[in-house]
Length: 201
Image (cartoon, rainbow, N blue to C red; front, side):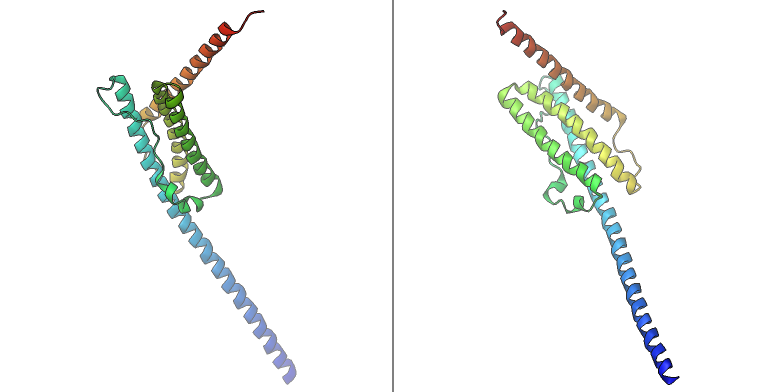
């Protein structure tokens, strides 16, 4: 009887150790999960703030460039470079976001860089006025892309206040459409030129 009692004590002691280890593991996992949630929420706040700051800069540059063009240089300020995002220098916060959102932001950075390269090439090899059109049109596209990401991220942190107006959205759309029409007309003119210089059989 004494042997059986000792055996049970050993078994229950082992069960207690195992349960304690499982409980400690579960608590540790829960703590880490909650910490990741807090880190992700903070990252969302920082990224949303940086996106909003970038969009305000782009909006200001587009408005000033439109004023410069509309006044023949008498008003406004000419811009032909799309600004960098503040989080480009340290992408740790972006990497903490969920994968689809982080992917969209990295794609947005690449699109911005490609747009600036296109603007520079247009100014060098075509015409500076064309480069301004490219700047305005590509700025509009990137602005709306950033707006979509901003709305998604800010909704997850319960930021509901509308930062930009529908007038801002329509202005950007008008610049996108104007660039598309300019490119269409240029392509048609090049096609006509090509047909004119092609020998007829």
